[in-house]
Length: 372
Image 1 (tube, helix red, strand yellow):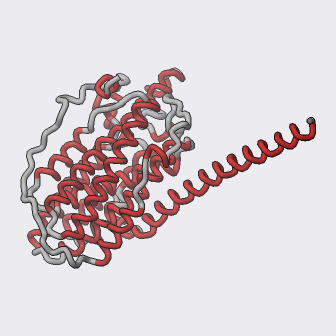
Image 2 (cartoon, rainbow, N blue to C red; image 1 turned 90 degrees about the vertical axis):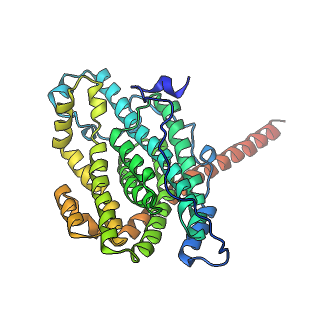
Image 3 (cartoon, rainbow, N blue to C red; image 1 turned 135 degrees about the vertical axis):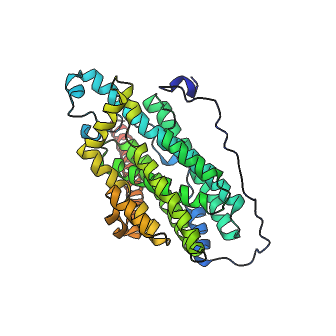
């Protein structure tokens, strides 16, 4: 069965072509680089992993409740539509909602792969090219993993959300070499990290928890890379150039906020679009979720030197201004620790299972000996 057979709605043309602009840049300086970026490049090489092996794909997933997250996370919860639904209809809604969430993760990871490749092409410094090459492989692995989860475990995909597609298009069409960093590393990946974290910390299903934890371990490095590169570069820009980038961030943040409403899912269950929008805006859980989604973006934007008055006002309007005080380094360290703890627990359990099998084989051998 092809991917197109699993889409809930038409994704449009088979391919989405975004006209490229800007220059491919070569560097003939192979000797030196920034120690911080080279250290991150080394870490990127050391931390490569195989999604076929590290993730336990034998774990079963109920497609009607793939995540086990609270129903309050669905904006229809508590409405008259929800009250009228049968248990089977609610199960269908859970499947659609999880499919929609992970489909956007999948499309975003493909976008990240393309943006990372664009950075390799366009960034002037060789140390940044080196690291971006490792990130391109990371993003390919993430797209592979999310695609497999949707195909094999949920059995349903949603087309790319209009707002995500718009921001990806704006990011890739811009000829300035720093814009794939800003659009992808800071905005799209920053928001994705927060969304991944919310599900990772609330799901009671081991397979999605593994997938999200391991992807987040990689993404923590990617955001660190964007911060380092942009912080250095933005110190050199004029006030006018910084304001241009802040305008891009403001528009991108509104697009990212609006892409997470799940309106397309509710429309498939007969809810008119206007009502679906209202339910999303009024949901207490989703209000908190939208605020927490910016826990990675706002401190990163502030850290790289984009903190003008208009940008601050936009964050006040979104209700996320106080997120600028989040400790981004601590959040990233926690992402690393959670993934490492999952590995330790999983492989300790496998080692105990193997030991038990060996002990049982020895005991069985002794019983056979004594009987003979």
